[in-house]
Image (cartoon, rainbow, N blue to C red):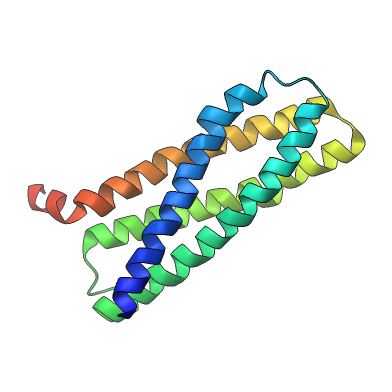
Length: 156
């Protein structure tokens, strides 16, 4: 029962995080460019605050269920299949990138809003977008490993 629940929570969290990033960067980013200053900055501030709440929940869920499933199913890292370790490594990389986004550039963004420094808000948003694109690419690789990892191993 634990394994089934952990897998379901893991997959839901991946969908929230990767799908949310795709929507934020690819869809919403283009639409928001048409909104005039300073309304754009105020909207981004509200959107990012709400989005990052869900990303934090996803990251916590993914890390806890991922570690739990490895411990439950394989007992240790040594017994874990390579594709699972690749997925875990990519997931940790995504989490690290998110931490940089949240603790560095999002904080810079919020501080720039308080100073009414539009160029600084643009820079912070640009960096958040670039790192978001990197996380989308890594996230799609994670999804590919999840879906085909055990089958891809037979080719190597």
